[in-house]
Each structure stands twice: as C-alpha cells, then as structure tokens.
Amino acid sequence: MKKTSIRKLTVAAVLVAVGVALSPFSIPVGASKCFPVQAAVNVIAAILLGPVYSVCMAFVTALLRVIFGTGSVLAFPGSMCGALICALIYLKTKNVWLTYLGELFGTGIVGALLAYPVAKLFIPSSAAVIYTYIIPFLISTLGGVVIAAVIVTALQKTKALDKIKNTLNS
Image (cartoon, rainbow, N blue to C red; front, side):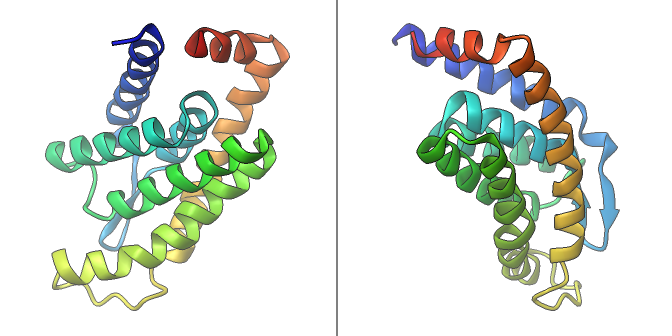
C-alpha cells in the first residue's frame, strides 16, 4: 500500500473516531438524530481526502453510530450524500465556500429527501412525509458547516491546511 493511501486512510479513521466519539451530542428530531459534527467532518474530509475517502468515512461513521445506538439509519443517506457532493465540488473548484454550500445541499436537501424512503422502509411507524427531514437536516448541517468553516479558516490562516494536504498527497 502506498504512503499516500495509508495517510489518507489514517486521516479518514481519525475523522470517523471524532464523529463516533461526539455522536452522543446529536439532537433527536422525530425518527432522525440530527448530528452537526457529521457535516463538519464531511467538509474536512472533502477538502483533505477527496470523494472516495469522504463517502467511505461517512458510511463507516453512520454504521458505527447505528451499531452503538447513537444514530439512526437516516444517517446513511444524509451523511453520504453530503460527503459526496461537497467532495466533488471541492475536487472540481478548490473553493471552500462552494464546498460548504455543497454540504448544505447534499445533506440538507438531497440527503433529507433520500431519508424519506429509508424511513418508510426501516421505520414503518414513522408518519413521515417526503419533506419531513429537510428543515431538521438543513439546520443540523448549517451548524456543522459553521463548525467546519471555523476549523478550516483556522487551518488556512496558519498555513496548516496546505501542509496537511501536501503531506497527504506526497
């Protein structure tokens, strides 16, 4: 395995650990457990790791949260859509502001809309309508994007972000 792959896998594992460790701080809204930290780690993964690692990190985090009982099955569509869309946007544009918007759209809109069929399939007692999750997912994601923006801005100002990216890609 190449050094780059091991480094990216290590960063992804750290982001999973952060997501799982902080998952008790979710906000229950109906059948979902809104979790702003997931949006923050999605953005950081998008910037540092790219789409494949970001989506895998989101999947593993969601899976562990469900296993430990700190997340619901709705974590899968929300986190994975957000991770994919914001990572693809960052890959194409290298613009962090568009990446933040990508996370908001990916988790808050696309993930929320995909949460509806997941809720119907896995949570039969939920009386969800298709737009049930958009507002809570958007609010949660906005909180996570603000957290990510603070972290990314601090890393940019100290030039640490470029150093981390260079280390991961060398």
